[in-house]
Image (cartoon, rainbow, N blue to C red; front, side, top):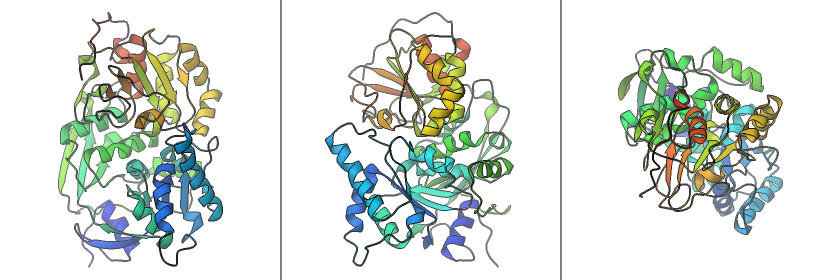
Length: 434
């Protein structure tokens, strides 16, 4: 008789051809999708060519290549990386290659194109591949050599992670979103609180979240050190799959008596809009406690909060208002489809009239690459996922993580604040001292 298993264990066991698996087991799993961007693909392609006998990828229909990090290319070096991936896609007849202007950021593009579904095993050459757990898939980021091997074999070895169940209860306050929930969670357990564990997000509160919010939380599970983050599949998840044309998938459920490394309960009713201060995502505080901190830049979007729901949240705050004279506000839809939806709904007009830069989809500023690099002494409020020292530019700049509501409100006020506090007196300017 098979042992009771968690959701992640169920998926891994099925893809390893085993009746059951236990934490610590080292298994080989079949993969349903392998993704790389122009940075991880460059090394992966080079290593793939070193594999004896590997002239063709194992399944061109199960590989996705997405230029996203330094696109549109900012210099000759990044243009060369993109050219290498583009040529490989043509050579290998990889149909899921998303050219600039026809794709966007991988973690937004793949789900909206019906490539992600419940019960899948997905690896990607990007740490935030964990995003896809929002649809009940096992998804994790890996190194480029693992991507190369997967290109050739369609398989990967995995050490089965222990699972941590987090149960969320309580009704969310106004202007509190999934980003605030995950920041609060990381603040509670720490950036090493889920090292190589599967974070299983459960409870009545998250069942009410839109799929976009689940993607946001799964995206940032890696910031707690997790191997993957995952949600159970429900009617909302299946409705999302139907809307994007994903039909072929298998739904797994955790056994009621499955064993967890830990079970953590979080009451969401008291969570205010959150901000993670430098230099770690675990350094969470209430936005209302940081009104003394002025900002030079606000970034809204990218892979963590670049979906249409995020754009709507920002537009709700920005409508009829102007960006503070001392602030640069950069709005980055996560994909061309989201960009187009912003135009159709009139959000693009709201952003431009408020004084924002409305950027092409790119990871650019999140990784300190382009489209919003910070200089010495600048402070940025951002809906991205990391605030390490030097993450978005100069080592003596600062990044504060928040959701779209707070980022938009702060861009208007000129200092860190939530929408409910707009109109408060401006603080004495506090300079960066890093």
